[in-house]
Image (cartoon, rainbow, N blue to C red; front, top):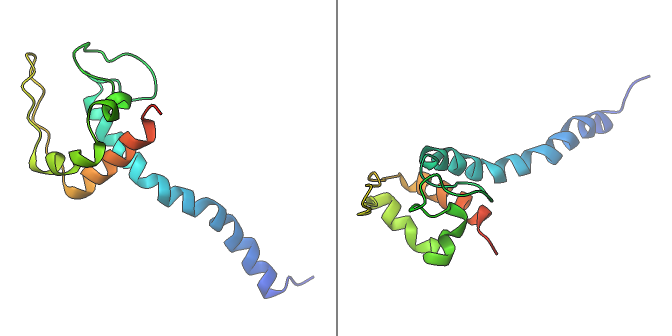
Length: 110
């Protein structure tokens, strides 16, 4: 039995259509998570849990302190915070900053 070409195409393309868009949508968030993981020794980077350093705010609460959209420029130019314990200077590329902010937005408390 021969499968018509259109049916065969649908059998190949339909599963990809179901998988590919979420993968593309999540790629920025996943890249942002990888950036956030570099901060997890001080900050809580997920949707729950306390920050290892009590002076470091959980990332999920940052929107309560700062408009996240305003952080893009600072992340690219370099954030230097004068904590007593000394947060390292953070400088990201524009793409990294966008990915990081996309991740931050995905975990904010509503």
